[in-house]
Image (cartoon, rainbow over all chains, first blue to last red; front, side, top):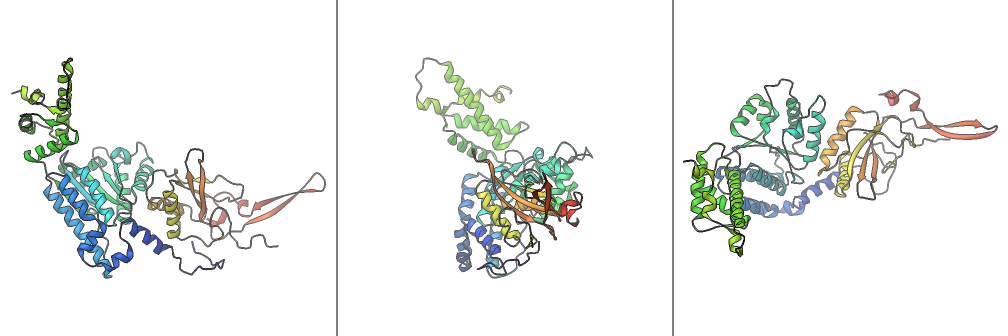
Length: 326
Length: 146
């Protein structure tokens, strides 16, 4: 692609102006105008310009619990801000590796945090667009020979400039089937994760012990991921807080004694197998809405008020099969 | 008479300019993506002006957000066909438009011999004229010394 100087165009210099233009576009897209960022030297100023603080506060406010995760995200944000400041002084910064792994039990908020992470990275200008492409094994791995590479590449192309979120990432590797195409997808992923760090951030998510096995059998993947975040299970109190928020979002409310009944329900449910944290709470609430609906439905002649329609009574909760068994 | 003064084929946009750099190509791709076009990559070693349909390199890329993905595909194509003509096409899928909105060459062989004029005598003394690519005399895949 050598450019022969075939034509003398007026106003064209030997060095094309395009690279700096591209740089401007990226910077201003991230809310950091180059002139403004050159002047700022305090952490506060970078934070103010990039509005990362707002996202972090929102994270604190909207997500219950998850203290270690929040602390880790603050650390990462701090690292990125300091890297930005170093850049202004011309200190060479190897671009920090931002690929992450979120491990934790179901319903602990991995996907939600990934969405927030994309926002933070976008505001700091580490990804250009800040969109999240959420995929699972089916989107990456093909069904016959030669099907996997184009599929994986297509997903990667869509995720460029944003965050690729691979849910249940451990399914990519199936040791029991040696002709599995998952390995091919992993190799392509690794290559892009290494060579195009500027263009893409990959977040793997999955259950803790299965992710550990996955990394043991794919050491290359493990070493390319800088940040391993563990999502702890929610405590009973936190789950109740989550319930309050969910029920608020659904425009329902607990009637007299219903919140206590729900706390009892949670205690029983926690002891049962397959508890999926916030997801189980949501499902329980959905079932309680069902019961409330059929309770109101049964009484045909009653005039219903808005209050009736939005109140969950202890009876709706106690009808759960959990209370029947003991 | 010199019929191939620049030694370059001029088709599509920007073809009278020096070759675009990758940064310039990225800007063009970003422009197209902002307009909602779907980019695709095509290659050929028979760049006759009437050869409208070149070979597709992969599928057209719908639903992309960032030019880096398109550029990745372009570089893969360049690696596979270093001595072919490669062009970028932007498809505008707006209902009622549904056509190629941008098209420009991003890769060309090192040596472009161009086209010769072919004369054919028909119906007595009438002449018919056409152009013929010098490179197309050789079999597909061996043109342009690849």
